Length: 74
Image 1 (tube, rainbow, N blue to C red):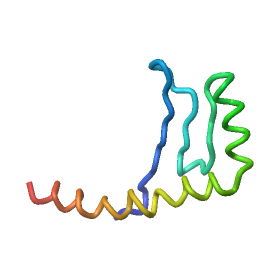
Image 2 (cartoon, rainbow, N blue to C red):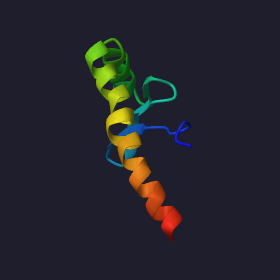
Image 3 (spheres, rainbow, N blue to C red):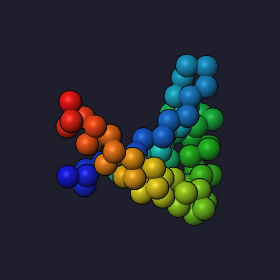
Image 4 (cartoon, rainbow, N blue to C red):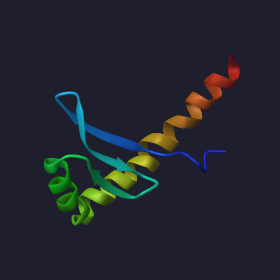
């Protein structure tokens, strides 16, 4: 069952995560001053949010079936 699949896209600079997109939350969350500013800007841009939300369908769910069957074959 691939219903509970989740996409997490983290942005890291100098070994510190400053912003993250989580498909369950459906928006960007900032962890530093710079990350908070970017999260606010990116969350207000429907194009960026739509692109990130589309990655769950385009990349994750598409490839999960292949990886899932490979794990079950072992």
